[in-house]
Image: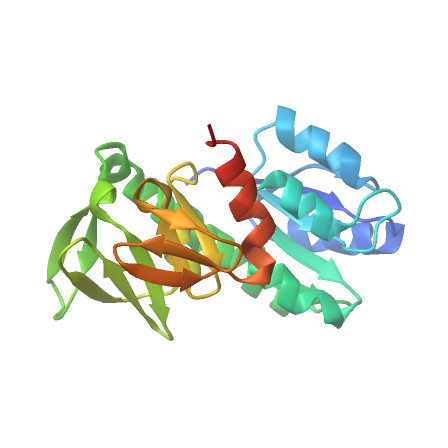
Length: 237
């Protein structure tokens, strides 16, 4: 696997120096730049192939949370902050991890291993996605079922399991919503709630509280409402 290209975004020089020290110890990471400006980081991410951002939250121009929303999942993010109160919101934005300052190298390494694992699995799965399908593991060690993306109506989180709802059946697999969302094309699927991903093509109607698909109404979570209705606006007549 190629090295993961990273940038550090923090307005505190000591925090940047510590991350640089940690990054230098990890063979699969490549630091391509540092900045104290979230807006500059946005420009870098839009013009350079970046895999991962180490992102502080309290920044002078726009916050790390705001930057994460602007990036729309195009780049993996590990938040590095001294403020624990943003942790829940960060996971709602599908951040890979949330490192609370001060953190040791072991905690840092645990976080970047998650990104490495995601990258490797994504590389393995891209050929199947290009053909429009996934193989989903079901019961038993070597039991898999082919699922065409166009047939997925919505996906429901059941703690450590997922229910993939198709038109006339559902498939249960051991996984998490966050993990599966890494593989799905964002132009076709959107998260509307911490427990639900929905295929945009199968939405029958929506109101301010729910999405209606296949004679089922699914709640829209506050954290996801803005991004969801922005996606709807882009497709309205």
